[in-house]
Image (tube, rainbow, N blue to C red; front, side, top):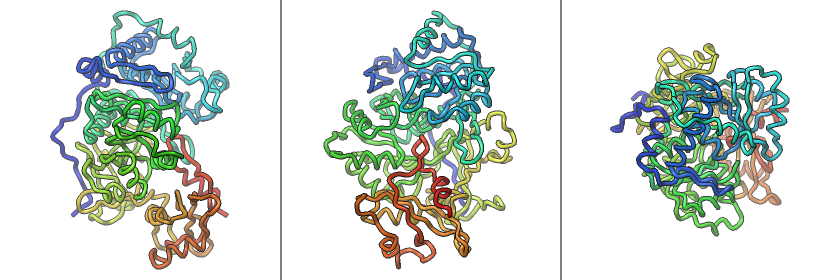
Length: 527
């Protein structure tokens, strides 16, 4: 049987724009809460949220922002971020998400590459002074005509421009309304351009598989600038009448659990490192998390032991694993509510309704038999329109059949569930043997002295590459030794997979969205 799967479904795709879909939610649930900001205590019902979105959309039109214009947003999580998301979609402006961790040369590149004319930004967060950084690059970005800071009088001045009966433009659900820059590990990032149809349907079907309704309250500690926050969080919520709960401007494990307890959240999102941080908080058991039912873990593989604790101690019996990439809006594969522990930790689920997935030989492009590793490709409504203003790079990623090539090595099982065995570029080749870091990481998570682990390949004179295990110890005063690690592996892992090097770390280098930067670990320990 070939490694091809098509996600059938009885629920049709939505043909809406995001604005039309929000209007439906406002009409159906005007008095239910749509958005809660825990830090400031501000709350929006659907009726108030819809009115505030329309007011901001009207203000943007009055400010000269037209359909197709690019509006940047460079900010940490806050209610204004969500309002900008829906207001730009309402008028067909293209919202450009800018990573809050970007420094001046990166933000300058994005502002120029996307042709941003209006920028929304936080004033500051932690060590970032966004106003000072914008001032540094503004002269070099001639297309940037207005900057509005959240929490500054300029925000109210903008809103004051709104008119009572604005003439919102007619839109198609296939219009581009979002550019998200993928974090390139080499060179500058590329701007994945997404339509209403791409991201509204993806948020909706992720929510459908989690059985969302207007009764749900979703705690979103992941960044809005990333698809995880703004699609799987915000759009999944509003397309089902659920409530978006913002626990903090950026991830804080205690603030996240406080929000779940205080707001009686039914769903919680995070990458595995976030759940690990929450579970390891002093006094973790003192938080009342009994309202939780479901949630999403995504971004990187989930260790079995972590999943067991999330289900048992966080009450998330229906938690889902999602797999995807920015270029596919983002989710292509998802576990189902009744999947067993093995499927939730050994796989990333099966293909979503209305999408296709296949595993191909990276060299020939031929579809592999089930059970054989190859490159995962996906196709369907979720595939981006392209990289903004970069047709050649688009053609490298999306082939003539409209298949998106993910760059991930995967195995499709007989039951259609997919295992991710690594990035094509992360695969370690030692003496001709292909080694998938995920397998070794899963094994080492069971070591009693290891809290977290990342495995990378580093150059070796004789073997080409050797296996390096980077670990965070459970007890910093009693870290594992290389000898202990190798003894733990002996006879249980093939000899060529056993780590030959060990680095004990306090933390891993991370992206803002919570992914470990393996490329940085490789560079750091290449000698």
